[in-house]
Structure formats: structure tokens, C-alpha cells
Image (cartoon, rainbow, N blue to C red; front, top):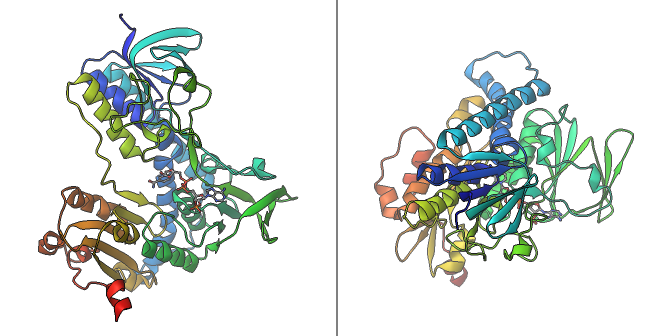
Length: 458
Ligand code: NDP
């Protein structure tokens, strides 16, 4: 049977666009369907606008630090509306770039909400279209716990478009989004309180990094309420009153929740055509080839139960296009995935944390350094950089590299190549560093931390 398209992608975000362009470049007849703006979470509501705001906030540090270098800067003033207008202009420009890239690749953009009627038939705006392969690149959305008054809170979507900078904001959650927005709002001049249900921020990151981040954020003036859960939110004459489960009270102009995201998998006929979803999260179950439980239906990115990161969605999308349309079976390799948090200070991590490595390997060595970056000497900024390497004692392979401090994402991005190649500690030691930089510390680490097992046996 002849279908209208070889590939029908639903969702024009980073993953969907990457897959569609690659498929079209191999000669496939491709349609890509989008219900909102082209570009997806990363370009329109996530990574890109967030990072622009991170840059904006960082100027506050730069101005402060400049004094130690002889600059006399008058107290600066910041305009939030100007920043948001500039950010919107850039995201609109990027949307145009995405549209052009799709058109240049020969993929047909179909605007509207898609629904699957069967494994080969899609309905968009009353029109029925057929495809040999369907790719679900439908992304996710923020979720909030169901508590009284939760309708008053904003998510990161609205935080990027507030009409004015809040004077004080409460941010609930301690993950990527919460810590990044805490740094943004604090840097731009808001009073920030974070509310987390555990003891530390950033579950899943290396414990030393987590402790260091909380210390640094507190030292900058961000209040972190640990082991605290919000029971109810009530509007007041100005702002909101929050009651905690333990009976405490907090108040804020704006309450933001960053308590995780869930896939956009409801209301489009997925379960009806037999696509298996995770019973709790609704994530599409896929194998290492991005195949769902329906043979010609695939899923990538935030809609799946794999990693929720833009570069992994892109890698999955390109791998799928190679497999389907270039006779080149490719599975996106997701075992060594670096990640960064654009908190202030920034974090970069690749490979295993110390805790994960101890659980998986018989014996590991841990190298750690804590130092004051050169720039902070003259500026007088009292913030240190932490770096850590985790090494498998038996093979000498470096299992993990972690950093918190200026430029951590850039430095860890480079180290990810070494870990992907399976580099050993000896190879790190043989590497010549660049002086004077922070990155040279990673190749000059010589002193192992005492082994906790050996210490306990003493
Ligand atoms: P995360 O999953 O990273 O963090 C969610 C946070 O909310 C955790 O601290 C969690 O606590 C807390 N939480 C969850 N449920 C509740 C609840 N009912 N009450 C109170 N606290 C709760 O989600 P984010 O929303 O921060 O980000 C979503 C995803 O977006 C990330 O997983 C990441 O993949 C991606 N992202 C990546 C970025 C990057 O690469 N730089 C930047 C931003 C987002 P606990 O730890 O106790 O479970």
C-alpha cells in the first residue's frame, strides 16, 4: 500500500525536527505536525530562553567583581521588560530558523493537533493522512501536586514571561528548573526562597556537588527551606500566603512550582492503537531503537521514559532516521551523557556519581579538589570551585567527573569525550593542562581521598 508519507513526525521540537530533517536528507517523504509554535520546549520555553536569562542574571556578579579589578561602576539598573522583549525577539528568530530548516530539507510542515486513528493513519484538522512510520516527538509539560490553591502558581513557562520581576518569589522543588530559576531571579534582584521536601537540592547528582551548591546559594542570600512541604496556597491582598504541612507560613508575590514534568501522551489516541505507556507517568515505552510497542510507531525525547535532555532527543531522532531511511541501523548511545545545570554557580557532570560507583564497582578511588578560582582573588568573591573524579581501581577507568564552579558545563562537555572513549586516570595524568585555567585541575589531581572502608577498618 502506498502511504502519503514515509515518515510522519508529531511534534516540531528539537528531536522531531532533527529526525525529520535527517530523514528528508535521505530522500524520505516527510511530514512534521505541530500544534503550537515550531521549536518546542528547548527553543521556546526551556534551555534557550532560560540560558539567556542566566546570562542576564550573571551580569550582576560581573558588575560586583569588576570593582576588584579597578572598575568604578555606578549602581546598575536592570529592566526586566527589556530583557523579556529581547529574549522573545530571539526565540521568534529561532522559530523562523527552524521553519526554514524544515522547508530547506523538504519536510512538509502541517500545523494543527494530530490524533492517531490507527498505526498508519493520522487525523489533523479533519484531514486524514497516512504514513509508513509515525514518530512521536510530543514532549512534556510541567506538573504540580494537587493542593488547595495550586491554580495560583506559575511554572517555568510563565516565569519566562512575567510582566515584571517579582520582589520576592517562592520556588517549590529542588531539581534542574528550580535551582536555575532561583539563580536567575536572585541575580536580577528578587528575594528568593526555595522549598524542598528532602535535605539537599538536585537529587541524583553527586552528593558533594549537592552540598556545595546549597552552601553557595545560601551564601548568596537564597533561603532554602529543607524537609518542607506546602499544604495550601491562599491569595492575599498582595501576593500569596503559603502554609506548610508542619504548620509554618511563607509569603511571596509569586509562587513557582518546578516539581517535574510529564509526557504529553493523553488525548491523541496512543493507548487506543496499542502504544504501551508507563502506568504512572504516561511515558511511551521504547526500546534502544526508539520503537514503541506498535512496530511502526516510534518515540523520542521527553515523551519517552529515557533521558529528558535536548541532545539525547536529537541523538535519538537522528539515529532513528539513519535506521529507517539510510540502511544504517543506529541506536543512540545513551550510556555516557554529560549534563549541566545552569545554576549560579554552574554544575557539569558526566558518568557515575561517587554513590553510584560505590554501588556498582568493587573498589573505587575518589579524587577531589576545592580551590578558589583565580578570578575570585582580585574580585574578593568568596566562592570556591569543587571538582571530583571517580576512578575504577581495577581498570583505572575514569567513571565520573563532576564540577561546580564557573564554566563547569563547558569543561565537562570536553571531558565527556574522554569518558566516552573510556579514558583511564593514567591518561588524564598524562594530559597537559592549560595554565592558568580551572580545567587543568582535572589533569593534575594526585591525592586520593581516604577509602571509607579502609578507614572504618582502622
Ligand atoms: P526534576 O525532576 O529535575 O526535579 C523535580 C523536583 O521537584 C525535585 O526536587 C523533586 O523532589 C521535587 N518534587 C517532585 N514532586 C514534588 C512534590 N509533590 N512536592 C514537592 N516537591 C516535589 O524536574 P524539573 O521540573 O526541575 O525539570 C524537569 C526536567 O527537565 C529535568 O528532569 C531535566 O531532564 C529537564 N531539564 C534539564 C535542564 C538542563 O539540562 N540544564 C534544565 C531544566 C530542565 P525530590 O528530589 O525529593 O523528588
